[in-house]
Image 1 (cartoon, protein in one colour):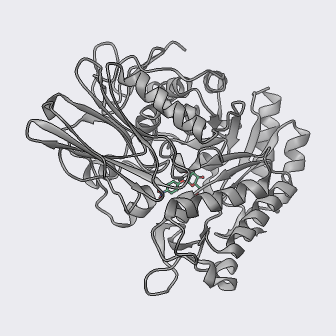
Image 2 (cartoon, helix red, strand yellow):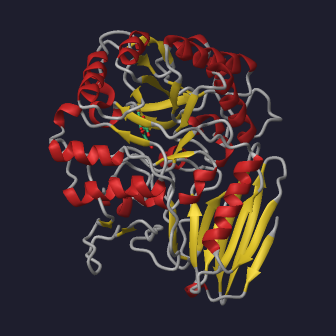
Image 3 (cartoon, helix red, strand yellow):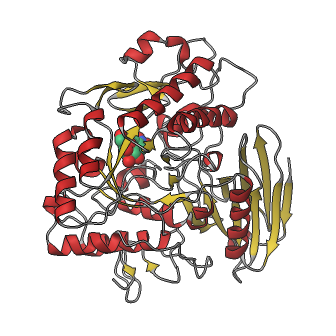
Length: 493
Ligand code: 9PG
């Protein structure tokens, strides 16, 4: 296990970490702070890597794939991996008296790690991230502007609501590329080919109407999951990831209960995944949002015990890519980040946005900042700015509506600024009919493509994240700082 001892007082060091998967926190914090870990055990497998959790301790910070330590002069140390195709790379920084101790472990086949002592942490981290991207043949698609059904219709989405929003978007000449149907069209988790009762049709009935209006059709799938009530599980219990007792593991908690994960080392599972992606493609969906992907990488007993977790994950994702086709656009979500590079076009780089700023009770009292809120989404997506070298970052949707939302005008503006700074995929979920003139103007601004911005400093932060960029400054704290209101951004509209 590579280790480094740095003779620097921990009180002078900031740490920049990136959590395991899309929804896990990324942060820029004083090293002496506590790295929060959720109190509820089921959040460990749904928001983090249960095999390498956040420490829960003061002065101990864990990070996946990359780690940076920042000195007061802006220099510091950057740890990174050259490749993450079949391995998970775990970094830990630990305050020890007057020194900082760093260690790295590789789960899976050995990979080359890099450790830089640098006078410019920002640049060094960007260079090392770019190197990993090149080594893993990161995909560099054109930026997509996406309307997604989730954040206003949630599971109640209907075929007619999709078409109605697409018609209105066309009438208003809104520059969307993709209309993406999210969770709710399917009869059960795993039963993707049969429609839910409320959807009012079948997913295959939608693309033609969207195409006529000039939009590409997108579809959400959670391809590595199966609900205990699904036909998929009833037909193929042997396809599931198992516990030591030989029984299918029950993991996570969503859709009203726990669910199972597919064992992607099983050849029949890989064949099914190829067929699933190819079928969605044949229905007219060249854009797929592949969600809850962490399921294939959970610890468990696999059909082929010689295959590690990261490798098993990659095999499952490769099967989806093979089925969808080389030219399909794949957006990963709830996904181990670095292990996806080269197979996905875009990746969610933070928790879900919600039409509210923060949920203190869950974040502060339960130690869980992986839940849906504007604050959590901003905090994490901004702190992963360098990952544009790995995939097109998707920091989640803008919210421009005033109705059905607790966000203030300041907070809506801050989300828009974040989308500009991250410079990746643009998405919105607002029912178009709900947008007044101001809402439409803000949405148009949010859909303006820009390249990724760079931080100006990592030695200070307004709220525990990377908050100072060349094009905008963010105040993620709950108090005014100078001219910047709480939750505000200095960013010219
Ligand atoms: C559909 C949604 C949307 C959304 C995704 C994902 O940790 N969790 O419990 C958790 C549940 C749902 C969730 C994210 C995290 O949302 O990010 O865009 O597609 O699924 O069900």
